Amino acid sequence: MLEESLAFRRVSIVIPVYNEEDRVGPLVEKVLHSDTLELEKEIVVVDDHSTDGTRQVLSRYEGQPGLRFFSQEQNQGKGAALRRGFAEATGEIVIVQDADLEYDPVDYPALLRPILEGRADVVYGSRFLGGPHRVLFFWHFVGNRFITTLSNVLTNLNLTDMETGYKVFRREVLRQLRLRSNRFGFEPEVTAKVARLGCRIYETPISYYGRTYAEGKKLNWKDGVQAIYCILRYAFWD
Image 1 (cartoon, helix red, strand yellow):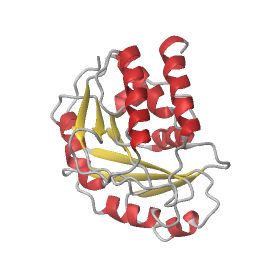
Image 2 (cartoon, helix red, strand yellow; image 1 turned 45 degrees about the vertical axis):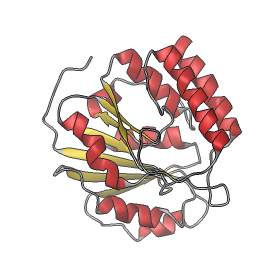
Image 3 (cartoon, rainbow, N blue to C red; image 1 turned 90 degrees about the vertical axis):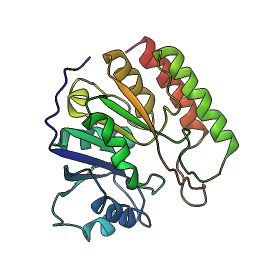
């Protein structure tokens, strides 16, 4: 378990983005105006080689204080973009923020408090603990439950939402993790590794505004199969 340290001054919000021309602008605005409980705010945006107008939208925010942009030379996936963002982040606390507006920065205070109060090293924002959420796909819900349960069996955790996009880390945690997954395997990989590290993990309810495939949702059944593979790989072979 990590030693306690309450000298938190800055929070880094890492945003991996790929082909979110219509949503990344409103998302950046929300993050810029979000409440981070008096912590200095650093926003690190990593464009994963978008092929639409995402880069043009982001260029409108160049020069904004506390906002930094990085571009991948080729599309590698969410996990690779997050590794780049983590390497560039300077805050004592790091929030993962998806760029698709499914997760609302209004939840930052609830996500930050367990760490700021010295009770947690890692916080997961759960879509299944009672927060408001858009009603969408039943089989996605079933698949998420199965993947979370399988992860829990092998990590001995009792998470309700391992696949959540809202994950918050003390920087000391990230420094001790050697992450490998390039795509959405980041979620089961980081869960297995923080469990193995003995981190204090908390969950807190969040709101969730899921989108349909017609609205640009990128996850599909192949990512579910990949998640199962990653759960087994990082439980037994890494």
